Length: 294
Image 1 (cartoon, one colour):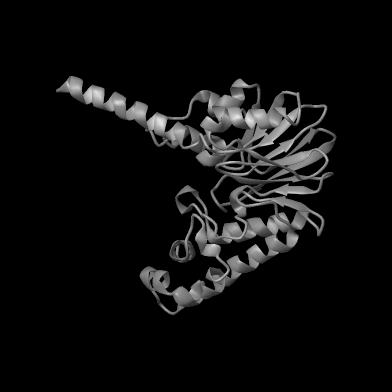
Image 2 (cartoon, rainbow, N blue to C red):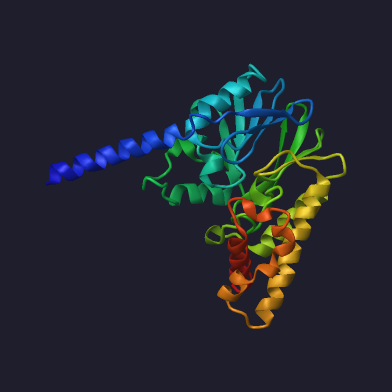
């Protein structure tokens, strides 16, 4: 009986890993030129930022582990230099899943203090912990600057936004902002309340990003196509609109279920298809209610 259990467990683990890898087989890594030496890579998971130049390759996020080879191939088409640094915008697996692979390729990983802590303590879906090689080597608690490929890159922590470890990165010469998951273009965002995220912190993160940019800035969102200041501001208006509507419901004594069922609270943006992504209209109403009442 014990033998059968062990065999079943092994087969489940192997099949699970096979199925997980197989779902990435058809993923294509798309490369979008953002500036003279900054690119955005789209695949499965969070958008990747890449800076190339004489100093080497600087990456922002790395999606899922099974995609590393495809991502590396896309980067090698841009530069024959080594990957020197990799910045994680937060700890979620669709942004950090390739960390261990990238470390093996020579990248030094940089992230907020809370990202390393969460990667160390949050079990993966298969119940294991992140390997030591997947953890950031350089961490910080507020902001830091990188000087690479002829420009200064500011890295800024946003408190309790999408998670408790979010950072935004601004390329000062290229005029490019990478927001991580503090911006989901044209859709409702995922605010991870269980990982320290909050509505107020999320709104403040967008306001922080807007401080750095102008009409010519190219904005790389955590998810969605390349964006700009107007679209980014529209996203902020959506967040503030939902907060106002749901705050009024809370003041009126409405329950979480009342708010979740009230489609009128989000109708303006539902009609613009904001609820067609990972977070639908009911989920965003519940998220706002829970965050604003805690």
